[in-house]
Image (tube, rainbow, N blue to C red; front, side):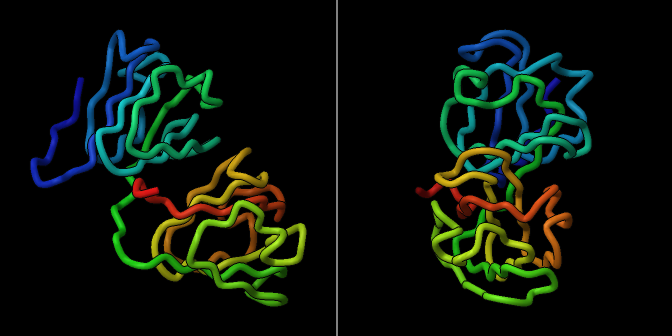
Length: 183
């Protein structure tokens, strides 16, 4: 039931079918593209270290949920879905974090470079929408609403010329957070 753990890898996640870390479980330290044959649902998670992105559909598709080191005894009460069907490890990054955000597609218009979390992207960019970005260093979590709420999107290093490239239906972005377990 559990994938083999690499003793050199520090990251480790355990997903349980029932609340309070009960019932069947899957334990892993890497990506898992399809949990459907292992767990019918996920009601609690224990993350011993690192960061993972949980997905509502197999093959890392659908709504995303960022989790960092800690215990999540009741996923539903914390606003997470219980129908987790896949997950990915977010590689550890101990250097600096840098992202450039733009209020127009194709990296045009007003630009702001961020190195820290931003609970109100609108205040930084002076625009209600972010249409493109370039992740220069680290992994970032983009939230649709201010103060790290709403739909979430994992941004890996690279260029995103329009919001559809990170999976969003619009450029409405409320907040950005570094994908780290150190805060």
